[in-house]
Length: 290
Image 1 (cartoon, rainbow, N blue to C red):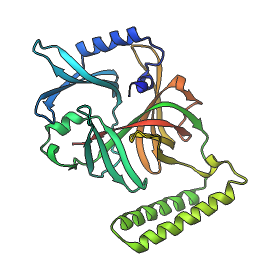
Image 2: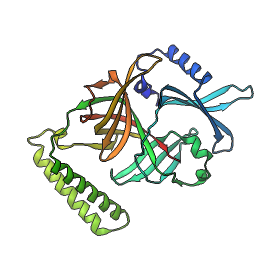
Image 3: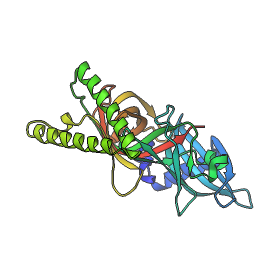
Image 4: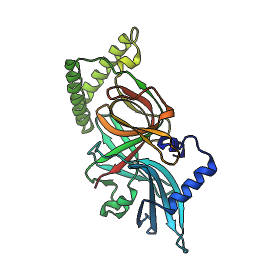
């Protein structure tokens, strides 16, 4: 997770300078929250904002001398808008007090796994002992290690409406198939064969990124890392006031899933503009909304 410090503006910074920033951030945090961990001990989270909604989070405990001792820290980007309303299964990591969330998102066709930002709220909740929690949705965000800006695919209004209808139909079929509907499963199989046949025909004369308008797929062996290609819905540039590095904040739509993302401007190839597409590898985070 420390490799994503560059995503929030800590790209060209030495180890000693970064250590000083971390120490100062723990001494003067913007937010402090305490709860009981899974073993019943007091656990604390400190947050230091770089800019509103982006910063560093430290998790650990205070010793007998009232000095905070961090177990680990990570960069974060908080989202402001809901991405999914699905109930979330909480999976605790074995080596530290940290959780990943898992939810069945039919728009993607795969289980969506993300790093839980607001773990302290989960620990404080009466649902903490439940395997699946339902707080009213998840606001997803992401940190990108690098990325490229692509031009949009030229589509007509009729084609966009047709694609939306097809996607809604596919989501309904996936939901029915998960409930044991064999006819829905067979229809999905036939649809996949048709898609494969269409792509095989078009790839002979077209570029793959003009055929595939958007995707959201797992990347590597770490469960909360993804490769994405999505349409930019909103974009702005902010400055990390510690390093004066520029960071782009974007809102993306990938396969009808909307989430917020930030990437260092020096790790981005191309100029991000609303309507264009972002392609890159991300670390997915999520805030379970109360």
